[in-house]
Image (tube, rainbow, N blue to C red; front, side):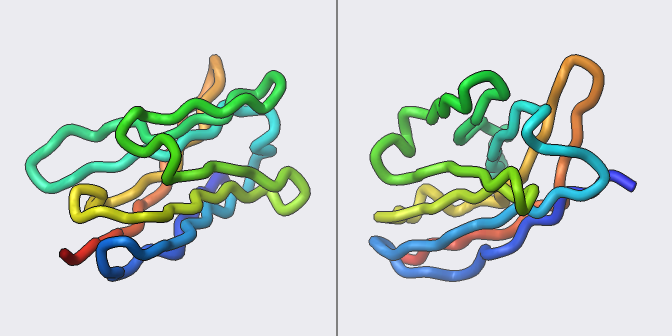
Length: 116
C-alpha cells in the first residue's frame, strides 16, 4: 500500500524553525521526483521545493529560498523540509508529493502556523 505520512508541523513564533518529515511506504522515493507543496487558507496550493530523480538537484520557490532546505534520505525512504526564519506568511498546510511519469502520490498534510 502506497502511503506518504507527513509530520513535524505545529505552532511556532516568527523567526523560529520547524523540520517537516515525510515518510514513504509502498514505493521507493529515489525513483520519484519528490516535492513539498503548501496551501494557505483561501489560496491555491503552491510548490515549495522539489528534488528531482536525476542528480538530486533541488529547486525552491523564490519565497522560501535561503530559508528552507529540502533533503531526502533514500535509506529511510523519507524526505525532509527544514524551515528556518519562519514568517507568518509561511502559515499553511504542507503536503508531501511523489511523482513520476505514471504515478502522483500525496500525503494528508501537516499544519504549520507561524505567529507574529
